[in-house]
Length: 108
Image (cartoon, rainbow, N blue to C red; front, side, top):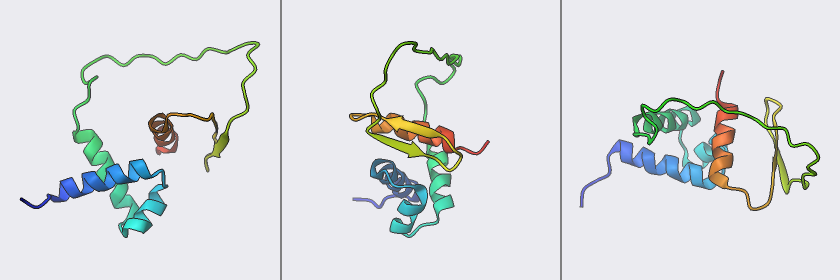
């Protein structure tokens, strides 16, 4: 049985972080690693991974206003430092929320 490479160790660590639901700082403190190193490896692993849509044209995102709909109150609300407020319904998809938070927290 061989030893894990550094990349494999970081891939496992990044996967644990994504499953944990912790912030980058909290997870890095728990693992005793630099938070920036954690973000770097997340980026490196993502950019190296092939995607199903590689080479496909980007699709435009459109929004539709729902008129007359009465939304139920969210089970919880997430407020980001940048001021974004996200209402999260019970039974939400954690992976989708993680993706949304990553996009909103990305530097511009």
